[in-house]
Image 1 (spheres, helix red, strand yellow):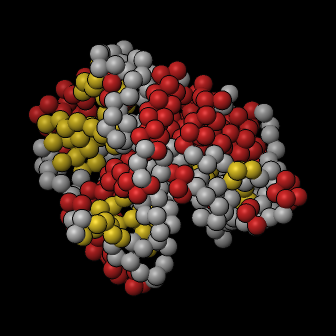
Image 2 (cartoon, helix red, strand yellow):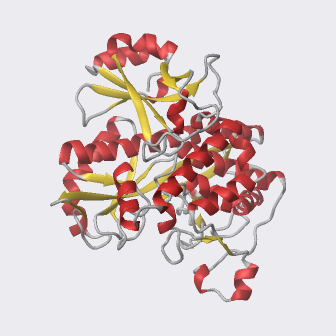
Image 3 (cartoon, rainbow, N blue to C red):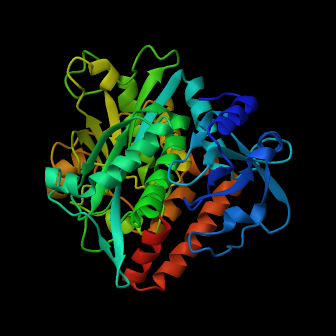
Length: 453
């Protein structure tokens, strides 16, 4: 990948690019941006592109929400990271760059979610930890027939028939991801009618979040432009189908990349190191607030329910897919490298920089306080007796967006870590979304999320 402005311009010209998208993810999880012509690319990469401060106060319904400091007065700059250049196969002569949002002094203006993740990564580095991660996405392919949106390409879960029915679409998606340097490890048809899953190779935390933006954009673009289909990353786009997650797989490494700090050969199969257990304990302690960042939409709480494979309780366990935090079985012969944790309480409507940054801050607090997690849940938390639930520290997560926002505001670690402006913006924008969605019928609210995400 190119590393300098000059490299990007040369690569874009070689690729025959005319327009370059300067992309960012706003607090509502919507991917937005502006196009720059190739003749002005170098200038705009150096100086950024102007963006009104009010833009981040626009929610997923395109409503401008009153937030002090985000009035339509004053500008910030969206400034691209040269390492994120990607050629987009589904649109002609177009490429993209992922951007930071910076003030005129070239620092975070207070509401840049990518800068929030960078701060979390720096905090981990101070503790001697490099975080590696990947988002494992589920999404639905759908088509509009006579004004009704229906799932597309249904087949039995994991079946060859299901794979055949969407093979032409998935192949184009994978090709478009490969051109961007994104390594697809698995592509399968999931449980829901028309539901797909794509798992990509892990990378450092910042690149993992950047990749999540690229993947969502690519899947949506290929499905719509090349196949006339809808690809929806909404948490629960269909009332009668299972929800979609964006499970975060992550591991903690020494800063030189030589050791997976979660791995402990003496801890036994599917168990983790003392540091890993402390990180788990921190995530569990902050999880009711964290879901405001990882399951952040009104629609998220249609998915986050018991026995929906979504992790609807504060819980953890080895290969427990109903627990919020799963200890993943390592791969034979690659135990040290492959030991990782999976946060299931995350869906693809999230802003990945906020979700991953919040996860890191929560886990680091567990390490700082040397917390110890409760007993792991070895069965579905919903089926455990009260005594066992108590031993495992199992308690319900917020049942609505409003409850999650209240938990976030009360959290002594996560809310201050966001910073004043970003924290106030998130609460205001998401509260406005909740108010608007509560006034809709459940089906109208689901449809709004389906179309946006």
